[in-house]
Amino acid sequence: MNYESLPPFANEAYRDFSEPIHRAAMEAALAQARTELGREYDLWIDGRPEKGGPYKLKSYNPSRPAELIGVHQKASAEQANRAIEAAHTYFPTWNAVPPIERVKLLFQAVAILKRRKSEFNAWMVLEAGKSWAEAEADTAEAIDFCDYYARQMLRLATPGPLVQMPGEAGHLVYLGLGVGVIIPPWNFPLAILVGMTVAALVTGNTVVIKPSSETPTIAAKFIEVLQEAGFPPRSYTFLPGAGSEIGDLIVTHPKTRFISFTGSKEVGLRINELAAKTQPGQRWIKRVIAEMGGKDAIIVDREVPDIDAAAAGVISSAFGFQGQKCSACSRVIVDESIYDRFVAKLKPLAEAFPQGPVISASAEKTILNYIEIGKQEGRLITGGAKSTEEGHVIPPTIIADIEATDRIFQEEIFGPVLAVTKARDFDHALQLANDSEYGLTGAVYTSNEEKLEQARRDFFVGNLYLNRKCTGAMVGAHPFGGFNMSGTDSKAGGPDYLLQFLQAKSIAEKQL
Ligand code: NAP
Image (cartoon, rainbow, N blue to C red):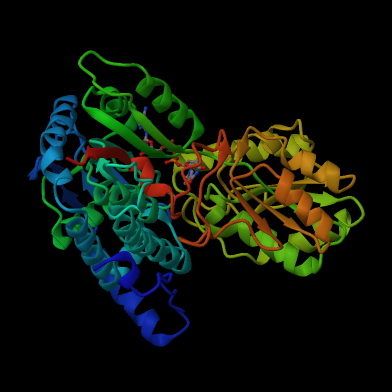
């Protein structure tokens, strides 16, 4: 097997659940998952299962808050320390496994995830409150990350030739770094967890996975995939526990070599700061790969090619998975000449958009608080209060006439709240779009080629979309990562991503 001999990479196709065969598969998977509700899962440290203390971590269904999904251990400080030490001890063994063998294991994981697709979807419906379609996209992205990174590792296993000095043979090899602490968020509870984990594993690192406390069951199910695929039991660790309790410990541990984090700006900056301080006995500068929040803007110009398509794109970007995507459109910036007409188009689309729950009672409280702030700052167009449905449901909320100085223009809300702002012209719209500490995704709807060129040059975001929505990045096609406070711009799902988990060794040999 080598990189060139593989058929080209193709994204995993989404199933259409209006087809009876796919509907039936999902219904069966949900029924099966329901038989396992409330099951207890163990920690996995140094190749063995372990219990934690008497206090357990419990996850609940955001659509039915009383429904218990999984019971998990809370790793103690002693267990967290031991987990890092054990992963450090095993690292040289795993790093010495030829890349091709690690790649084969990852292709095994692809096959298992494909087989268990409906099962993973079901757990995401139950534990994260995803719709079937959103869950399908999440599982497909997890499969894509495994498939894509396996191929990228094959490519890096035989780096291109170096310039050869006379009388010398020179070459470059890539080595793993050491123990990677993997800290994912709950909003793509499978795809992001899987992407960060397998990128680190396939490059020869051992991983200590601290799952999100909202979605630990989905993470536990993925640990089963690593087991079934044949990854050595000591190459991965499953360490649930509250980030506020064990997070600092695993980040600052002197044997931790790097931290791969996706989540909020506040936690990401804390990790970055703690990781920068050298601990007694530490022998390296820790690397931090941090992908953080967004305050993503879509510009709708007066020369919009199709105003209905633009309104649909904004609504889908703003309210898909209840706006709980780092890429979600939370600001739409509209040219004044079409402003009223555009706002009028948004309202019925938002009201017809399928509703679902936000992740937790505390998220619900934060979002409702921002809605109250927004009502003071602007004009409520639709939504604006909790739904009477069961679960943490907040209907799509649109607040117009928001200024750049307003809090709901500047702060990440991470829920179904869209701020609408008026721009005098395209220059002003771009200036407003860039008026943010974040820089993750952005989109522009215009048919004017000069304005598109201006956006390509001046819209300062890691992922720019022209005449389309700003969510739905596909592995391989849209390498993903943000500028400024949106993170370290790691470009997940892109050709450069794996280099962040590797160190290159240059070897020059004098010919005798
Ligand atoms: P979060 O609150 O920052 O939590 C993320 C992870 O960090 C969780 O596993 C959490 O564990 C852990 N954590 C909390 N405190 C910690 C500490 N002191 N040390 C180490 N780890 C700690 O974020 P979230 O609510 O899960 O996710 C939403 C955020 O993620 C949003 O800001 C969103 O924009 C961002 N996001 C960004 C991207 C991207 O690619 N840029 C993608 C998805 C999401 P506990 O659950 O135990 O607290």
